[in-house]
Length: 568
View 1: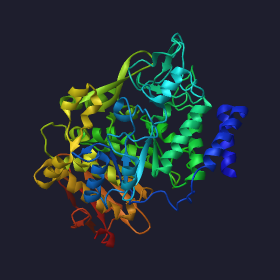
View 2: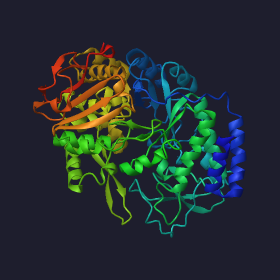
View 3: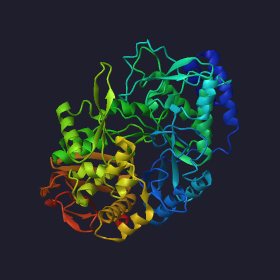
């Protein structure tokens, strides 16, 4: 079988011939034990694909499990708009709002059960977090490691604290090594990329490899159609290197992809690498051997910058490079997530003083900044902690829903699959009380909402939530009908006016000119030079628009096309 031979070569390249062959026999058994295998899909992506990002308990109702509450809300209000629900880690955890996993096979009983997940899977496709880099210091696996239990002795990475680790790329300003005492009294320093509670897996250990592949296949059995590889860039460690994007890490992604290609070729891999764009897209591999999707991490901070400056020039120049060679890959476009707005993706695009300007905007609107440790011992900004609503409005008292919606319209016209954080579609603002409660900057956009309060606000057409929510849903539903918005449909970025982000999307049967005024001023542009039809229909409003003189109100967006049944 070609797939098994590919797996064998990867394992031997990572582990050497002897250990590679040992690993292959373990993986063969896991593959053989897998239930009915699905055929490869005709296409991975469609303009129908829209992902909702949410915690399992983002919505709550007394007397009901949060996952069931989310299902009720989604089934009633989001069906026909959202196709996939991305559950952020919903496993038992000890810290980091789920990303310090104690048990990779269980659902946190406070959130619900696998039965709840299965039920929601009848109405929506499912995306799970595969927290592959680290595990909790409070879980059974770590307890087994501390006890020296057979198969767990090498689960963690022990490092002499005198070792020179200055070259290691750090996403945090916390210490890289954390001290623990084993049950035999021996004290060890363990590699902890993200926190002392998050113990990095030692993937040089074959029991770790076997365990995590078993977890991967378990999630597929539970109905996942997309698996988000959390913090994948840091997976493999070699002292003396920067320990990010190493060749073995890319080979591990290829290994996971090769296994899924055999047992579940319909399941996609999405890599989470909050790094500059060229490093990010390296996880596409050759177009068919690594991730089908990568997070478009440059989009959130650069779009934020464009709105702050009321100038689309830098955003437009960057977007011209979003062309992909393979139809089996695309971008995962987002503006907000459970984390903040990453700063590293702006490296090489914006000067440090421009980034400082964004930090000033964030702080002026009650946001915070998280930092990372550099090899020289200094700290530099890593992410901006603020809701995307407050970042774009750049005014903590603003109620200007149209400005925020304009930012989301840009996200939804770019090539790729769009994903929206639940607090964005609900128009949530900074949760300052939460930051005070936890002492963690990221809590600012992780509020747990009582669903009855949300529903009450949505019934009030004058509430900010209602102004955002229903217009956002309308935008999504219009977009899903347009073949020109297929994730891999062709595009050209148009330079019409620095205040307007303009993109032409086109497929065999449709062309759309998507225009977004990023400024607070009325702007007039023309499509005459583009040889567009003299009159086109604005899909957003249904109006006929003369293309030789298009007047865009402040923060207005238009999706112009010829009359088309798909617009009805």
